[in-house]
Length: 495
Image (tube, rainbow, N blue to C red; front, side):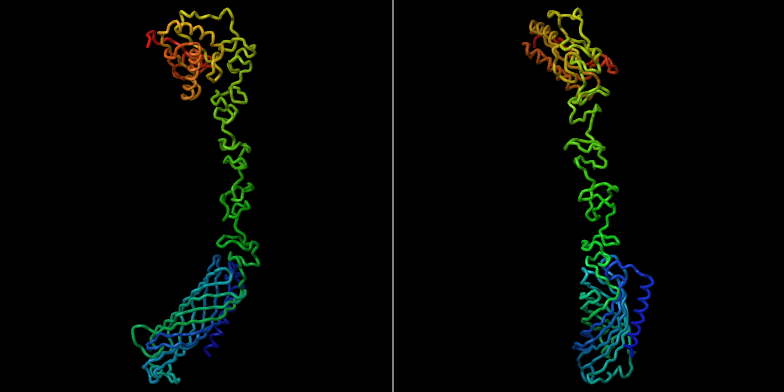
């Protein structure tokens, strides 16, 4: 009668849960979400009571489980169950030295199942139950305390179990489990002795039939029937179609995407990063100079850096400190169309014939104004940088030879003189660059003097750079005057 009542309760509970499922239409997030399971199993019992020797006996159990929807690998569920069986033992504690107690249990609790793929589900459970028990001897006679009604024949019990379910079909699994039932009183063997209440262990096997379960081979929470991307790696987040999530929609799923915030429409590589065809560190969709040679430094737009702003990038610029606004050639150097040594930006006579000597403004010198320096009176000489050197370089031009040849005669005639050859520049450009250029120009003059036989020990080279201007650097004319090499006597005593 009690078993019939229990089965009826199971059926009613199952019907209620099924109706709730139909109404709520809970979405299935993994293969066990929203699933019912009906389990039947049987096995052995082994009691731990006040008798000296415990004996194996048997039990049977039926249960109904429901697993809540879950997006991960695990599902929490509820369970109601009924169990019947026997526990027994031996010892000199009753007339036949043996007891056999029939037990009937009805209870409920929680269960947690963890998916290991689509076939193996280990689980653990815990709960409480109402336990009816009937202690008798080996001959089926009620034991003394039971017969004397010294205690009530039911009590609360605490249940714990664990096991594994192995699916042999979509809706069927074989189960193996072990459990323990701890009584709240000490009368399972009809006597109360010792400090601990009676308990017994169970070892069982059985079958479970599932209602509402769909296979999910890759364990991503999307049933195979709805999964458009089967075989998704374990743990990868997927969308409602079972495909790996691609947040930035670049075609590379998030778990492989090393650049997860790529703007919409941008072409990416296998790592999900924006393409950079020329390898300059600026992605193609931002690169305004998409064919930059390898190794060239670029700005935020991916274009080669042009420090002096002359339109020729640094890696091609042979004259990297060109003044602002000056016209340059393909090498980034100031244009000198007529080749007279005066750049177009300063040349007031831009069409001077080849070979004609010009002044600092690029205009031909009048022959009658050319002054031949007399060797005997030369103690200082100033060479204009614009007419005696290539622009922005240290190479000495032929214009300087006549003046220097006159100075050579003075130097040779006065070997006890010590001379300073000092290079000067205008105020444009860095200190280090100007000092270096001024010294190189002074060195070019010394090299020429040495080639004419002047002794090196009488010559002292100084690169002043822009430290000693003789005119303002705010005008073209002033800067032209400041670009010079000064040669002057330091001492007339031989050192």
